[in-house]
Length: 312
Image (cartoon, rainbow, N blue to C red; front, side, top):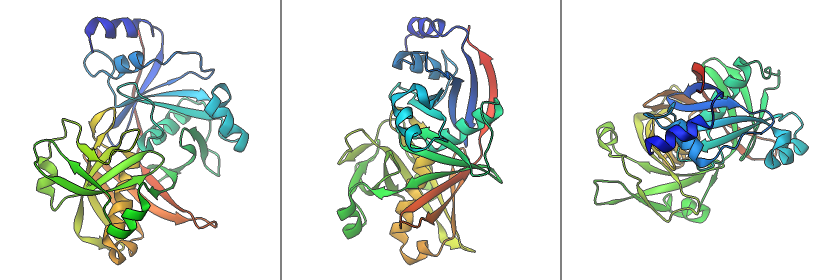
């Protein structure tokens, strides 16, 4: 970002109180705008997220009371407990439907700032991907991420692969599987940790077919053996749309587990829980089947408030 433009955008936010948060290294600038009065333009988001000229982050999260946003009012009418809306923006200023690490960080922000309390039934957070229920857990917070689905279900079921991903520096298109967690993901399996470490994710990988709103790309390596003591383990790196490579991606972790379980067949079904190692730490994933038959993905992991400050 141009230094003068960044300075101008940050000057327009003078007096803004913010927190710097992260969840397994996926970091965010979070602030309260309860009445939804602040204009969170793409330019302002880019300035806040700039790691040299701003605060730095993979995204910006604005805490707005649901009643003050159109999307929030619609969810509030269905679920009166969803009082706070997580208005999430990627580092490039684009709007994202959901962020699994972000919702844990957001819940921690609301609780640590005294904006809400943790109900016995869990904290209900309104997002563009619906209402998410956050609960305290041993390592931080768990989030019901809702049901998963294949983006191209017929091909996924028939062939176990539905897309192809070409990564910078590689002359081959790798087969992959596309999963939605409220936002789109394409998952690629790699043979070993060395190949995972050597990936060049400084440029946007090419995905064919490309979902209409872009896609996050996850590269995974299953442990060998995949399941031990009913815990399955995988390692992962991710390239997020609108951001680039990040140290973690909550919805991407969920999508990677869905894809790996599908590929593993009976071995994957034997796992009670999954441990996913990303460059920023480890998150847990498990599945719960609801009375209506829908299978929900439960994501768990830490959330940390690193610092707070006031712009200007």
